[in-house]
Length: 192
Image 1 (cartoon, helix red, strand yellow):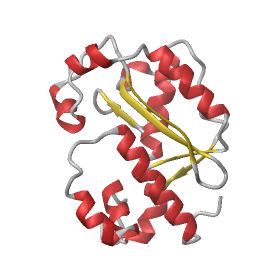
Image 2 (cartoon, rainbow, N blue to C red; image 1 turned 90 degrees about the vertical axis):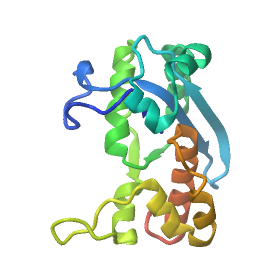
Image 3 (spheres, rainbow, N blue to C red; image 1 turned 180 degrees about the vertical axis):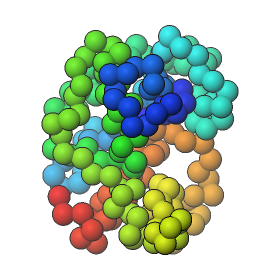
Image 4 (cartoon, rainbow, N blue to C red; image 1 turned 60 degrees about the horizontal axis):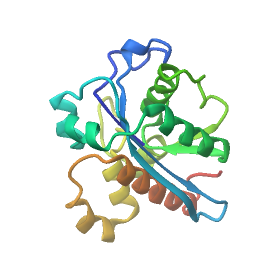
């Protein structure tokens, strides 16, 4: 999961148009083995050369001071992430169409080639749409937020837990996404 300096100006733009894409300020991932056991858990604040706008800090709580004090060089983080990508068969994310181009732009910005095209991807948000069945516009269901999907998958536990969920956090979001993914697999909503 990612937390960023903001939103892209055009979410349909190519990652190569770097000015369109926000910078990643937090990147987290959890790597699982074939039995669903977590074998790697990483979380980094990236020390970017750009400032984090107050509007982004309101969402994820990462300030410029935190970035300066705890941030790691983006190339170092992306090198670690690339090692994890090479060990996996599938990338799972909630709203993967948002995260993938942001990560690809960050790779390009730091002198890497795009890395995610060859890896299979699953979006828990898209899978969750017809499970949560939340009314949306135009007689269709809306995409659930991660918390909405988590509540649907784990109602008893989620009610007390989600009241504690305040700011976005890449590691917490990665963990919630993983729990939803494995629950959806258990329910045969995901076949991989």
